[in-house]
Length: 309
Image (cartoon, rainbow, N blue to C red; front, top):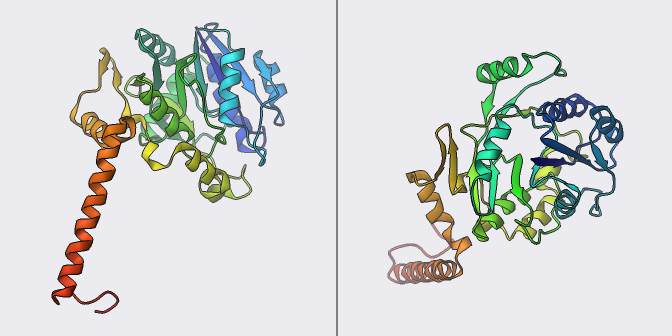
């Protein structure tokens, strides 16, 4: 049914049990799921062997040693054997609600991208997948202690091959690459499906010791800045809020509520070249009018000259 592919961090420290939990939950989904582990980081070959899943070692990296998103998705499309594909961050725990949502989204006759919000929870130990109640117990903890993240936290992407003919060489795990994927899907006319109402994916809380610069290095370092440039800036900062469809317990429906329509209008300049031109010209005219009014007011003594109070 679906190939899930991911690029885990080295199996050190907290990421050892966090990633074992995540990949174990994917494995527990059953034979309809093929799993590809990408990368040559420490411990990945052993993890793949223990789970009985495929391991692709060679992934093109940037000069900082970070795997590139374009290569990750190329390998996923090339090596995956299933009709549907899913990139998922390697610490995300999936449950029994995931595959039914994938099937529902795949009923669309057009290209689609399924995404959804995550719930963050502190998880300090490994999960015993031999326990038939592991999922129920974990979801009870999420309801009691977890926190649902905002629509900018995007951790999984389900799609068919060919959705993105070309992807810029983003650094994985930095800024904007996930937002760009949603933007590019929308720009190609694909349906973007928000499955958050029926799929509860769990993101374990973790620190940023895996990066020498910590949290600041991840979100503000040179790779983050390059990702922003490659994405075309904040004009392409699309999130789950930019979904065209919503998956609900009653089924798939167009996202036509007020919040989605307002968001669609707000982001329209990024998707329509004529509208983008109009907005840029309008803004420049408004800035020129404001500057002229300010100059006239100063000339008439109604406001003090610049730099004076």
